[in-house]
Image (tube, rainbow, N blue to C red; front, side, top):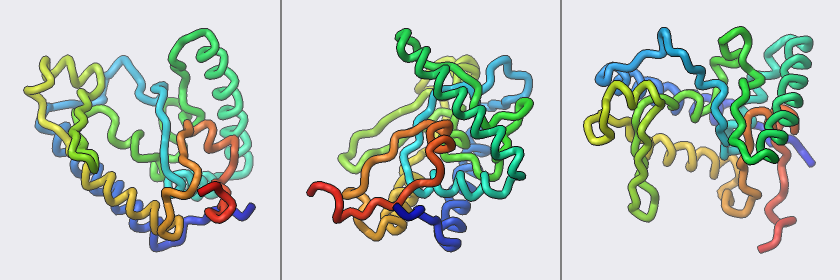
Length: 205
């Protein structure tokens, strides 16, 4: 199978989505106010799934810019992460492990970190296509500050997710619904390698 490449124009558009997200994040965090400085927790050990081919490909664009030795180290860390997460899941626990991209408290791919990594922390809302609104309370530190879900300002994720879904659909040739769904941790995306292009015609209708 061929590798699914993220064309430069779509990579630039994804970077613009991230930029808009970060602007909204800073605004809401400033209104709370919320800062990560001095926090005893580390969001990089949170158990997150990521759901798009475009972000998977973007992650690998960043990985390939690193030195070979660094890439090898990150892959080994990702393999270790997968093994430990399976042990914790088998024991009935939600995994809490440091992200394989974390190096001494910093992200080795900070400029290529994914959407969920960028938005975690502040309260948010999302309106689904069926009109149902989902609400997210933010991290534990944020919840301690606002002391009540209704009192907190929120970042609206709807437009950002709509733009991301549109970008994903264009990357997949306008037939996003016919491709296998993505639901992977960063460690899985690293160990599996770049996303492979599975032709929609080979899938069951």
